[in-house]
Image (spheres, rainbow, N blue to C red):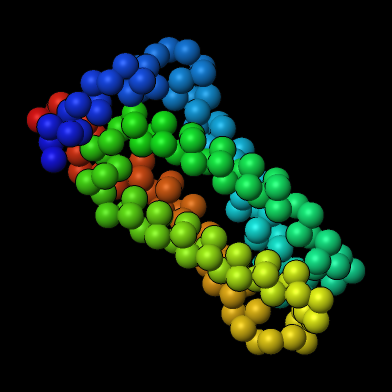
Length: 166
C-alpha cells in the first residue's frame, strides 16, 4: 500500500494543499470544511432537535425547505474532505479513527434521511408520533458527535503522517 500512498503524496495537488503557503491551500480548505460541517451537521441537528420536541412552534415539515442548504454543506465537505485526505493520505487511511468518522457520517445521513421521509409524510406528528422518530433523531445527534469528535482526533491519533517519511 505504501507505493500508492507515496504516489498520492507526490501528486501536484497533494503537494500544493500540504506545502503551499497560500491561504487558499490547507488553511482555506480546512475553513471550507468547517463551513460545510456547520451547514450539514448544524441544520440536521436542528432538525433532529425539533423532532425531539425543541422549538415546537417551528413546523417540522417547514424545516425540509433547508434540505438544499444541507446538500450544499454535504458536497462542500465531500470536496474539501477529499482534498484534505489527498494532502495526507497515509495519515488518514492508516488510522482506524478515520474509518469511524466515515461510518458515523454515513449512519447519521441514513438516519436523517429516514427522518426526512417520515416528516414529508402528511400524517407526521412530531413527539406524539412513532417512537422510532425520537430514536432516529437521538441517533443522528449521537452519530454527529462521534463523527465530529473523530474528525478532530485525526490530527492527534495518527501513527504515520506521510509514507515518504519512512
